[in-house]
Length: 234
Image 1 (cartoon, helix red, strand yellow):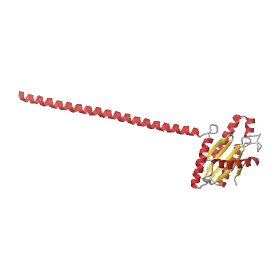
Image 2: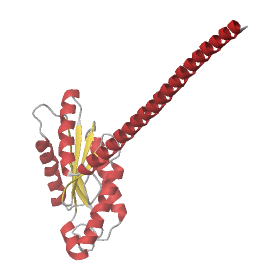
Image 3: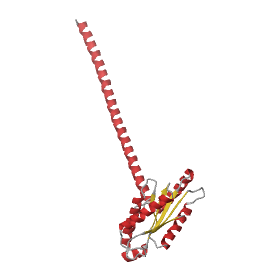
Image 4: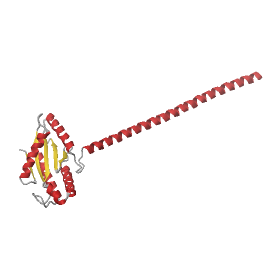
């Protein structure tokens, strides 16, 4: 009987040891799994933070880029972005053998407006005119920019003479429709524009300067002919 008890004790001890070892391993594995889950959660959180940071950085970069291309007063494209865009558009048109249209415009007698109504009113006027022009020139590839002072300019890709002329006349009508009083104008008693337009198929030797000069020559004709009009290059 004592021998049997010894066997029972040994068996109980062995089983108890095995169960204890097994439980220890189970607990160890559970701890490892818990650590893995913690590490996985931490990794997921870090990845999500990285993605958020990348998105925020992209948004910030886009905002800075937009600011660098925008005229602070009028809210339209600035001269720098116009220069880059015209060069790119001419290069594209050379490759595709397509036309590029350009409108160069000047607010009539703007110095007299500033002198008599004040520079604050002049800024408001320039801003209103710029926004009105941009509302007309609204195809995705088109660009309206402030060229300098009271001069604005529009790039019209893939636009022939009649198309450029139609856009120019629409701009004239829209700006007259603003009915901004200008009692000191040498044209009529509201704010108007003089516009020079050109459309051409550029070749490899065509430069942005040449195209601007062609439009500027027509702008000069518009001014000398009484203002408040569009003149197209023949």
